Image: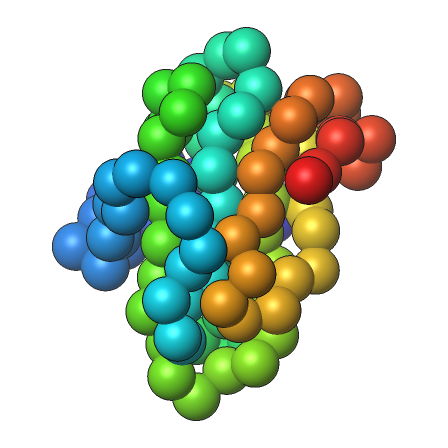
Length: 110
């Protein structure tokens, strides 16, 4: 990443939508859930859309509503200081879960 995670977190905090409960994402949503065993920094970015970042506790979700994108990326990092993490290509309306974290794109997604 060419810009600091902390500055991105501060800039995009207003665009974050936390979705509660389980189930499928609604139309036009890109969601990721922390199903791992630790708090992590998550990123959701619809293709061509705005990126959202949030530290998620175990069981929390991060969602971004984007009715124009059909694909995007979700990612996870140990914290704001770490540059290496995992990313995963996603489609709209299909929520993703991080099951296990291992740096350098060796994460388990469900």
